[in-house]
Length: 169
Image (cartoon, rainbow, N blue to C red; front, side, top):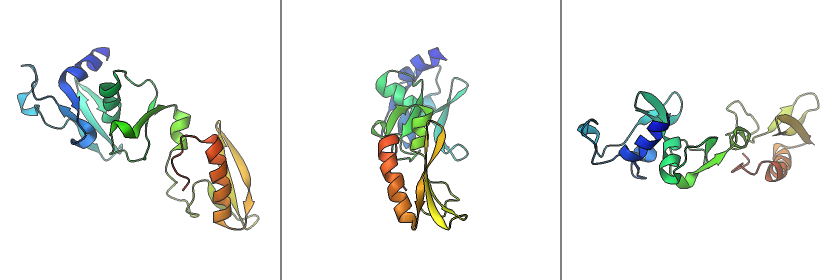
């Protein structure tokens, strides 16, 4: 695998105009298909929701390759898309983080009915409950009359405990 990292730099370049921001170099050694020279590397995988490409018999996510090409280091942790758009592999949209920090920047769940992350209707009290996860523990922030009040409590807590969160909805 370490050989692949050295080969990435030899055959691939970072290019923000390419889909996924990675392109084959225009001049490639004889044993690489010349038809690939200058073309975008990889494609968008709808199943994983990431750009990925095959290299030397292995599949790689392009945001990790972008990180390597731009920093010279293979990421040992998660690479987070700051704006949550997995199609945006611009280096300025990527950051290294832990798995827990990456979870802070997750989108709101699809089954969310309040419109706000960490806010749901608590039927037992007929109030809106606000919650936040800290170190894998779910903490209740209180019960509120409106989802907006619950969201404000969540927003305050997220500003303190979730520095990787880019928005609160």
